[in-house]
Image (cartoon, rainbow, N blue to C red):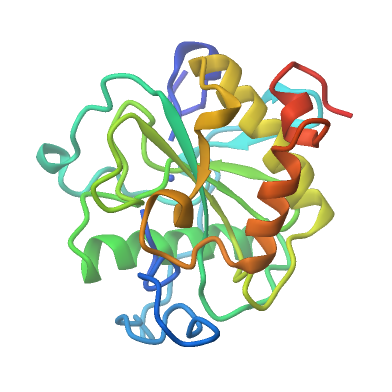
Length: 238
């Protein structure tokens, strides 16, 4: 199967980029994420080469194989601990300066730049998130879900990290993003028997402004009774 994602067998792959998940501050409005962290301004990610096709995992939802955005494996395998089961899910934004991601190649380069920053600037074993969702609604595999992520300080055990590309303090998630987010979270919840009460945002379990005010508001809404994620948890994608 190569590196293709097989949700039914639990093979999947998404940690914090720059300051997208910074600690809370006392100012009236949190500073834009990324302002205090190193930026690899001279780094130009290589153009990715797709070596595995996307895999359909649910109606109208596919996951792009890791090989579609990077040629790199886990940089420090010995520092990438086993997940030993999944019991919760946490949603993030990248919190970077907004850019227009116009297609698959742009999204792939963005994800690779996050991985490079995590490994080279932060010393992480790999990209910290297990999955990434782009503005068109594509889902991308990141760190293998069999390995513990690096996306919420002291809260990474048994915790799948799902990153949504964008800075949602200053942007709003696209309708395509939100539809895929709800549907994909529903898939993960059913696959790993994670209840709705254990689907979090970063700020709910860590000291952070992540995932930005706009995505946070949506997550509160979608988890309510009758919300789309609440319905997705029961297997309905309306």
